[in-house]
Image (tube, rainbow, N blue to C red; front, top):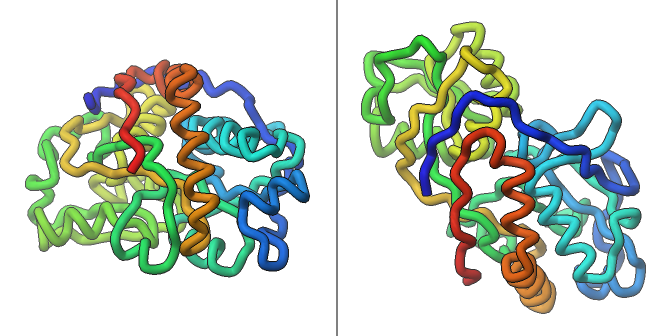
Length: 278
């Protein structure tokens, strides 16, 4: 999958959620996701609120992005209309806790499937595969990949995410890691020149590059595979199967590709083939 992203504006259509709330209770009682959806016709779904093209809260209070469209498709396949969805912000460092405490029913928030996370929660999918990359200022010439983050370069990523640790452990041990609460905080630090680069998945970085034409650019050398999954309570096997079936249907009927083209395609990001469901 190409990581090339041009600095063009993302066409973020307002495909926001019914319910429109930023909070809410998750699964009630001992119900799993499938049972709750069937009986209550309501779900609480965790998404990112600050990722252009993926999960973003709009000025009018609606929600837009590829992850949002995936979440809505899954919910409908489970029997819940958009009006029955309550959206809850799921910051990277909070995702496992939100699931384990029952504050959300499931999470669709650029949530990479890792062995460590699978000790705490379960995943359906993957529904997308991204590649870790670097975002730098447009006039930067000395950062050409993770191996060039030497000389005490400052690298920003968000708390609870794996990308910055990947760089520090595998490429440049001397890099100074700056952690922020949200990706937008890293973008601000990069624009203010308090950090030299930002790292996370290429599709996320492409959205921010597109928002800052002529100011930020994607290095374009993806160096990991990040399999995005739908996070839910540990060992909810019935719901895993149902969500996997929904993702497969979305891929097969063209809605998956259409959602990517609408939300991410205008940035220049090359749309990949859908991943096989594990």
